[in-house]
Image 1 (cartoon, one colour):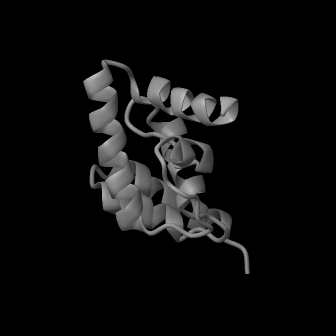
Image 2 (cartoon, helix red, strand yellow):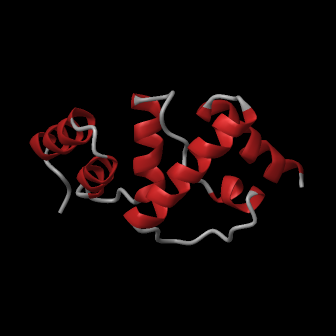
Length: 107
């Protein structure tokens, strides 16, 4: 059964209306067909300065293997790692995100 328009509006409003990282992710995961990678992309588009996209190419650049399913806890650890790495490198989250993706593509 697919989500109704009202369910989509409610879930996205919950995700975009809270400051709690776990609540943001969990609200988006309530949508049918949305896993952590898709939810991370939605968050990146809504808050481009705050969120990287959890992507198999980015993970590969970091020496991690991709998976078909990710937990919210995994995403929170990835988020913290990327924010710290971006800060250490004096780049934006989006710049880091694109660099990780490109590094994997070129390898």
